[in-house]
Image (cartoon, rainbow, N blue to C red):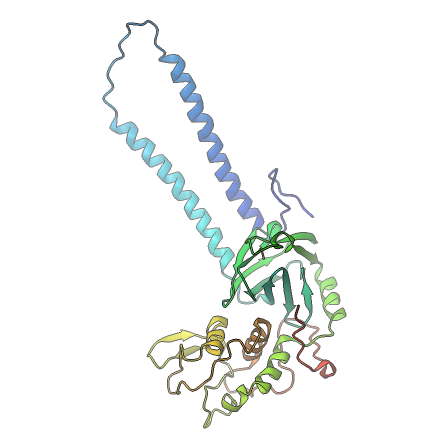
Length: 343
Ligand code: CUA
């Protein structure tokens, strides 16, 4: 654990936490400086210009354009510096880097369900390696929650029917608080957990030591078969009733309404739950909705499978799709039933 260089703030353990603290320190400094300046000047003038006898009549004041310009321009510059600095940190914080390891988070009343891309599940605990970029892909099963790790200075709403992301890179091994920061019902205050930051080698050991479960992509592949997706999105490309999904993720998609978008998690999710919303150019809107038929976790698994399908001439995955991130991917066919391990 490492405490911050500023008093009264939480542990500081990510690459952005120092930057956030510096901005806060600046905001507090400006506030304290002007509070002291204004109250000091106020007291000084009260004494200096006090009424000295009952018949004293003060001189009239006409005002000063110079002074008024000065006290408008200076606060404007200060306010814009806060805005620019804050925006810069905000953008850095809200754009996950391309090469980040992905971890899935599902909030529900009143717990955090977490799954690593290699299949390991955790509840109210998040194990991460130090010095690696981690991207969280988050959704909720019920109401709005908010994933808050004070030591990392990150906090993002987790919404039903939507994916939100946040990312971080932990810098100091240790155990840190994880909170739900959105009132979500009776046991909101109990929706807490721990983030355990480990050395990379310890983390890899931890991952392989818990490798009893399927990766989300493998579970997703089974759902893809059992739900019948494969019969239209077979991947042959020829005579398919639905669009080819191999290499879809991150690719530009042309829609029947002449719009173009880039296929991301939100688009794939919408296409599963509300297939008629954005139909790919050249296809008929014949796909049935799967809303209510798959849990949020199964949805994540299917999306994870689609993401794992290689694009551009490569053959669609058959066995265990590579889930890219961990050196210890183990998808034993022994544990081969889709295990949504709910509740
Ligand atoms: Cu979940 Cu508050």
